[in-house]
Length: 249
Image (cartoon, rainbow, N blue to C red; front, side, top):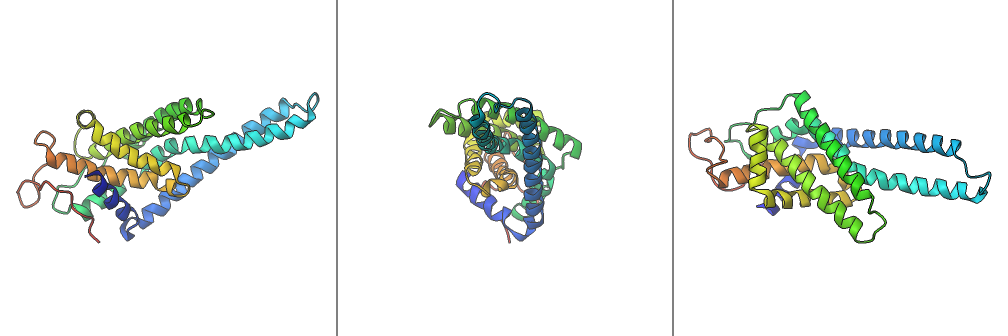
């Protein structure tokens, strides 16, 4: 189910139906990263200007600036999950609505989260992601461990938050959380697929849209396989089939 959901989500994200949202999502993600970059560079410049090493160690100023620039690039990589969370919260319902309409036309549509609530969940996710990734940044200089910690932490976070955002269109958020816990392994593996995008430059800008689209498929698939978490009947009054359909053109 996960591979099918991943391929279906990838095709959906690149489809004409989501192209406008895709460019908006990329634009907003880049704009937020540039804003963070500007703020961080200003803060670092201010610190270096007021704590110059040139008086005692002239050669260290240039070295410090080089390390600072490299450090900011690394910091931006670790901030992408948090930025993606805010963007996902903003475009959640637009993306989910397209996926549901095109790939599940016979199903009852999900209920859009109020914009303020969606952004609140996005900001909560961003804050949690920021804390976890700052902790992962502490082991950056340990080869092998740094990549593993970064990947596992974000697989859990992205799986948890994107799933609950997608499931929250069909059920109370508390129930969505219980459904996630009951299917924790599936959700974690789905989160790992999303987290893998973070390692690919440029492609990682697609994380918010891909994450939402994939979790719509995952949630639908899990709901169809379980009587407990099943969705309402289709528009023809019959129970929903237990398969994950391909996205329609």
